[in-house]
Image (cartoon, rainbow over all chains, first blue to last red; front, side, top):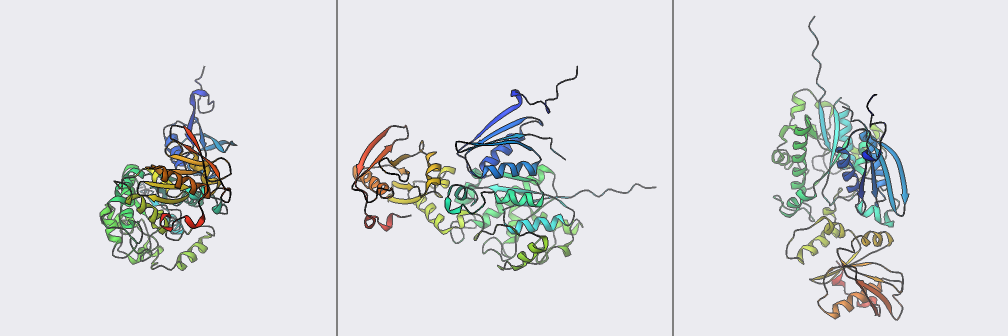
Length: 90
Length: 353
């Protein structure tokens, strides 16, 4: 049996949460960047922010750094962004 | 046959502010085949975000981080670095003093380039680029001060200013042939025309050009609030929350030990809600109105009454005979008061910071 490739099957053990509420630009991005630096390819990070700017800035940061935005949800003045960490290109 | 030597891909890191000049500087260097990545330093005083994100006044502006946006336009990676703690010493003890307001521009630029020097060493990059232009800014971008930045930061001849390189001594990347000096520029002075022409040539038609740069410390109103805070505290030490609150609301200095911060609109009130655990707060309950955070303490009942009347003034009950307000302590306990709103004529001009 081949080992499970976690990069394609994120489960609860490789899903992480980041509370960036009450932080304003660019702190939600900085916290996201610092959290992702500690994660492995394939893991998921869900960032919760109350900064309206995060909706543009976090996806922008993900695009330039090659990570995938899986979902953006807005509810009760919160912006919840789920990111899949991708392998860093050299 | 002898194998041909493969030229090493040279790498530069650019200080990205989010404005046009750093955007152009990167493009000029990219055009010479250099791999460029950006770094952006968050000092706590960046104009981005805080105000634009919460105020309706700025609703026409895109709620975007300009440095990120620029990086995306250029197709480069951007590393945003939190330097809030380290920056305190730069602001509090600038070797070269302040500019027109509380802007320690020369020390600030030196600090940022020094951080970039550390960064290129850690990340195996070859040199640093900035969007500086000789004579563009009165403090940090003068022909006499540019060598100071290069020397004090330790960047020396690894610091390239592509927009005015032809006005400056050749740097190592030029001497080594990594960069062609003739493909850089000789811009100088405060005119923006050469930059705008180059932007047009590159097809950049959307870029930020904030007056005074991208730092609140060059803003006169902000500097007044910061000085007031320092003048009325035993020490000039500050926390990030302190400097963020200086961007929020109307500030009324009622006494050296007492300042009121009254929200100007819904966005600010919502944001200030998050600070109710750090400040005593006052808010009207009988009428819609602004949230007030109390920076300091009430040393007498008269001071409390004065504050309540002022907050009532900024509610929709300002013409009512009485307004009811809640005073909430930091532990969540609340007490209700009724008060006649202050007349506009009774708001003393010396209170307004």
